[in-house]
Image (cartoon, rainbow, N blue to C red; front, side):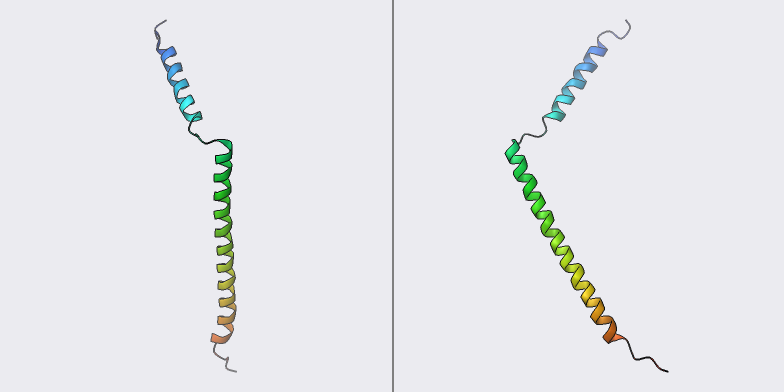
Length: 74
């Protein structure tokens, strides 16, 4: 075999990186669930704010367009 122990070293290196990738999350199940709920609540608040802004812009555009148009000449 010309490669020697390179195959075993590569296998060990790949296994080591796989273990590191799996262990990135150090939170328990309840802590992860709490964080997910907090992020979801923040997103809901942002969606409500965006919807209110959209409604305000639409109302502003509707009321502003009819009163700012000059009368048409015949």
